[in-house]
Length: 204
Image (cartoon, rainbow, N blue to C red):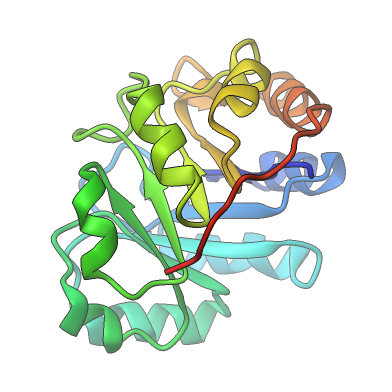
């Protein structure tokens, strides 16, 4: 199989169009106000309207009110909500679209009924790599987005090692804090060239 690719931290139309044109599967828009990749929902809506129907749209939130999350998901037509905070099972059950839940502890898998998991470092967005042994373990159990320290140069090797459902990148496709179109192209190309046998045992 081939890995799915999520380009995260989208803030400009050109980056979104390049990601779609090069074959990315997901675009991520960060709605966490304290994040350096935060995008105003109104601007995100304009970008989404230009690529709607050609790629899956993910909204990133952290400890936001579930009513707010559902409102943004509805208004922008999000396909997925990605949760990066301390959201528990009760909270997740209130979300009206598919959920990707960020984890950093393996035993969290058994506690949450979500569609996908995203494995990242404790402090996301720092460009540091996850524990590859842990990543391989998790990828064998659930549909996993692998994040943390991925770049165009290392993504192929990490896919071969971990065999995740998808790879997720933000900082690794930036230069001086802005989306780098050439890095986006290289990341998607290098990720999509890898073919591997998925060893997924079960999906929670």
